[in-house]
Image (cartoon, rainbow, N blue to C red; front, side, top):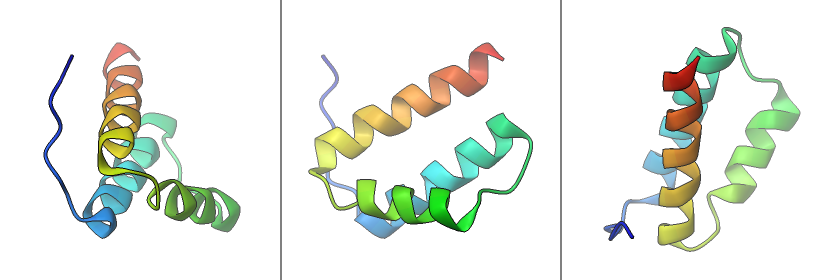
Length: 61
């Protein structure tokens, strides 16, 4: 189990958008960005898990 350090939600949101944009090869829609913003309100460890999952999917591509 990874121990996640607190990261400001704005930083995590920005990183999620960057990773997903790279992985999808396109810009995110407004609805997708709003969903990322909503996800950014969850607990910092949950944000870390989600970001790591996004990164792993992009790397497998």
